Image (cartoon, rainbow, N blue to C red; front, top):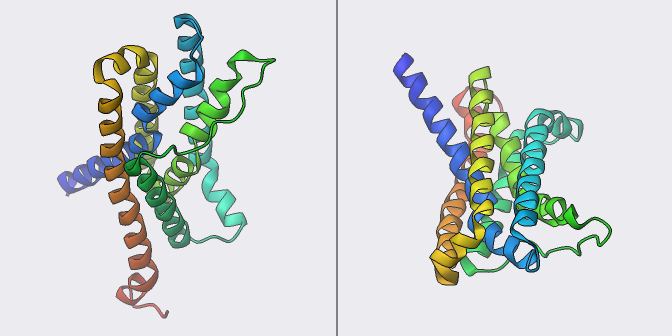
Length: 218
């Protein structure tokens, strides 16, 4: 019994982590980050990368805690949320597989040089609709404090790895090259596509079949 529970916890953590890492798309973010900071010094890039990831982690953690209340306030069911989240992930994944940008960069604020770390890097490129929706969906699947702890750990680990890749974006670009970065982005897109479809299938199964299995009226 304990072994089964531990196995389910590991699967839950891996699902959260892999999905979030794929949505954050650190390799694609690294290429975008370099494009947005062409004239920055190495110190300026490091500062902006750290700031972007801190804001991203904070936004995701906030939605993990408040997402349920927000959607209950608007009367949105879990299954509808999962279906919508899966659709968003599928659309993002198709863009990644096709090599299209996930979002259009917004103009940086000339009065605050580090503002691009928040907009557009943190929001909406990293903590965008896909990442926020995935966090809320996983939070709905968390039934125990252990699940919430695992989801928190997945968020922190995914953003930490994204931080490492952003901090080493220059050396990574030199080693992998443009072709290598594009391959990495497409591979993450395929993973994300599978996760999005799984979300949709789970939503359909829960909405149409679970009530029957539990002996409830539809």
